[in-house]
Each structure stands twice: as structure tokens, then as C-alpha cells.
Length: 80
Image (cartoon, rainbow, N blue to C red; front, side, top):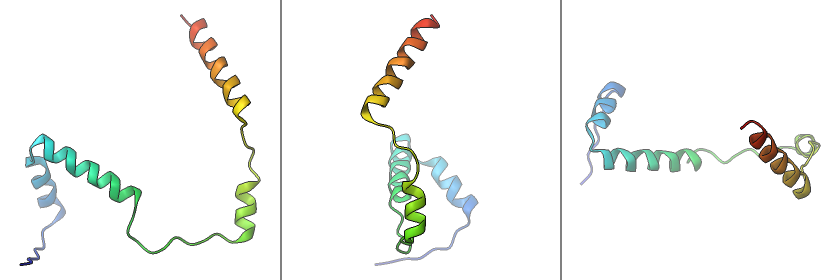
């Protein structure tokens, strides 16, 4: 059996507010999942020029990341 109802945003919001905490958390986790994996149309594949533009940005090496993390530790330690 399937049923369709048409309710407004305010009514949906009030219903969500009435949910028990566990159900609210479940709803928000499901919303995060749906946001991360939208069911819309297929993404547009960028053209070659756009791809080249994106690939022209600088890249940080593993060694540079380690240097940044070490410097961050030193800065945090110096502030205490």
C-alpha cells in the first residue's frame, strides 16, 4: 500500500522537532548520506581546457606536508 501526502515545510519541520533524539540522529545521518551522493542528473564531464586549468594548481608533496605539520607543532608549543 502506498500513500502520498502533501504537507508544507513548516509541518515537516515541526514533525522533525517531535522525533526522539535517536530518530533525529538517524535522520541527520541519512541526510548527510543523501547530500554526499545526490540522485540528480549525471555530472557534467569537464572539457579538456577546464581539466588542464585544474591540473595547473600546485601540488604539495608528502615531505612538504611533514614540514608543515612539524612547523605547526612548533608554533603550538611556542605559544604555551
